[in-house]
Structure formats: C-alpha cells, structure tokens
Length: 421
Ligand code: GUN
Ligand code: FE
Image (cartoon, rainbow, N blue to C red; front, side):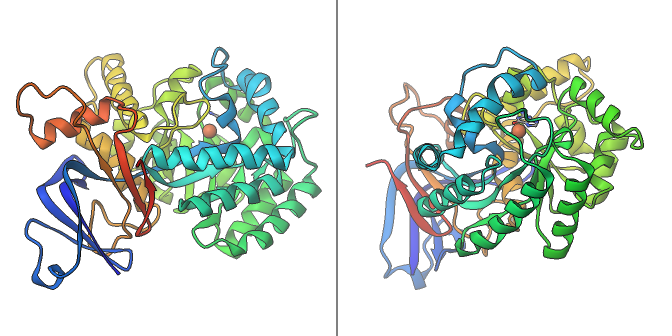
C-alpha cells in the first residue's frame, strides 16, 4: 500500500540540521519510507495523496525513558530528592498496579495520551508486576505504539508494598518473557530498576539473560548525589556507578541509562566505549533537583544521547516538552560552566527527541528512505500570524509552544494510529 502525505515536511536529517521541503510529499510503501519529494514522482501520481495543506509534517517522537505506573502521579509530589521521593510517592503509586483492573484503566489512557502528544516509540518501565506489565504491552500494542517495555526487577529497598524476593523476581521475569512473545511491536527489555534495588544475585541473573537472549537493558545511572553515595556503599569493589552494571554484563550497545547527570569523564568514556545510550531527562532532573546533566559534553565526547520524559519525575508526557526542556537545561549548563559549553540549538534538540531516539530502533536520521513511517501532522493555524513566517520559524515556535489539539494525525510503523477529528 502507498501512503502519500502532503504538507510542509521538516525532519532532523543530521545533528543540528533540518531538512525542509515546503508543500512537499512524504511517501511510504507498505509502511516503509520511499522518500521526500518536492514533486511527486510519476509512479505515484495515480495514488491518492492526503493533503494537509499548510500543516507541518514532522517525525513523531521517541521517548527513551519513562515510567508507565507513575502516570497517575504526573505533575504531583515533586518536593523531595530522589531517594525520599521514591519512598514517599513513586513506590506507593507503583504498588497499586498489583490490581490488573487499575493497570488496564491507566495504561489505556497512557497509550492514547502518548499518541495524542506525538510519541510513537517508547522504552518504558512497568512496575514489578508481571500481569500489569503484560497489560501495558497489550495496550501499547493495541494503540499502535512501537517499542520496548520492561517488567521492573527489585528485590531490595522497595519496602513492604513493592518488593519481590530474588527467587520471585527471577521466576516472574522468565514467565513474563514467555508470555509476551505474542506482541509484535512491543518487545521486552530487561529492567533492573537501579543498583540499589537489585542484589548481586539478581543482577548476575539478569546479565546472564541479557547475554543468552540478546535482550536490551534499561536502568538509571548517576542521577543524584545521595544515590551515588549509596551505590558506593553497596559496591565498595567498584570505583564508579557504571561498573556495578558492567560487572554483571549489563553494559553494552543495547543498554539505555537514564540521567547521567553526575557522570564524570571516566564514566562518560565507559559509555562511549561500550556504545551505551545516555537518556537525558531534563524535566525530571529539574523537578526532583537532581542537577543539570552535561548533555552537550556527552555529545561532544561521542556518547550516544537521546531524550526521555521520565514521567513522573518529569512533569510532562510530551516529548515536545522534553525537547524544549533539554534546550533550556543546556543553557543553564552553559551559564553554570561560565559560558564554556555550547547550548543545544532547536535543531539539535529536535534531533535528540526524534532521530537520536529512533537510532535505538535502527533507523537512519530523519525521513530517510528505508525507515518505517513514524510521522505527525501539526496544525499551527490557530496561532497568531500577523506577518508571514517561514516554515523554520513556525517549526521553532511549535517546539516551544504547546497548542492543545494541534497534533491532527499520527502515523506509527506505517499506519495512521491517531486522528484528532
Ligand atoms: N531511580 C530508580 N527508580 C527511579 C524512578 O522511578 N525515577 C527516577 N527518576 N529515578 C529512579
Ligand atoms: Fe526514571
């Protein structure tokens, strides 16, 4: 099947550059992008184009770090630092997902809200509950979202309401891996919550699984100074936090590490050398006062960087917000660094929220031929336009300015999965 989307096509074709085709055509065949054209090639002229007029046609976004069972506490309870915040707010909220009915209701909303905000790909934490994790995967799959979801492993530090024994954690993980084979677009990712939540025995088990089954891994790294102190006390044999993952085989090119706020040159080099992706979550880092991640330095040093919302440490599900917040954080970093580090431009921020995240799924940057079609149509016509604006100016405004209802349609893996009408 041929899909032709006509409009003002903007994509992040390389870090820091935008490719803009005004009133152009984005063409996909059987869900795979064939190309972006100013003039429609003859072979497509018989096919019907969806004409989006003056709308912006953008890549949809990829959220590489977020917590599904924290969606009920979005934009609440951000008055404590990480470890206290986990105990006071996050763990009690996640404990509710022992109830499958509750999970079903929340995850149906979540899947719909992700699409309405233009996010079509995710790497997402569930809670430790196997059944709720399967429900999450099912709701994402039904909505048409692509990605990885992980049953959280935590056999220590969760308190009475949210903790498994080591044996339970291992058994439930194996069962979950068996039971989630039915899903096509949502795949499993191993999810040791973070080092303080997992005993060595559990970490070794997960490292073995990652190796045997070639599974990706997601976790947290060097987010908060008190957390890092705790990790040092738990692992006196490790010089740095990252080594507590590396020594168990949880550190490679399929690994996502959220935050990396306080990663120093040695830890950043370990990321670069292993091909680990640092997932920058600026809203969360600000909301729970973790710090300001050195996102520009990470990029300059060749570390793979992408963005996440980190709901509900982060206060918005929108990856547009994640992009704008990352740009603002990079400017705060520049000020703190006495103007020694560059900030992120809008084009660079957009690249991180789209193409850099999509790279984890094997995509080439932008709307490259061969990529699966992940796109959205954005109508900014309700904004003030007293004088003509270029497409680039309109795009920049849309990165910063949230307009309820402006995302009119969303395509994921070649299918239209959301329509605002
Ligand atoms: N570290 C361990 N768990 C969490 C979590 O749920 N959110 C954040 N921001 N950091 C964590
Ligand atoms: Fe997180």
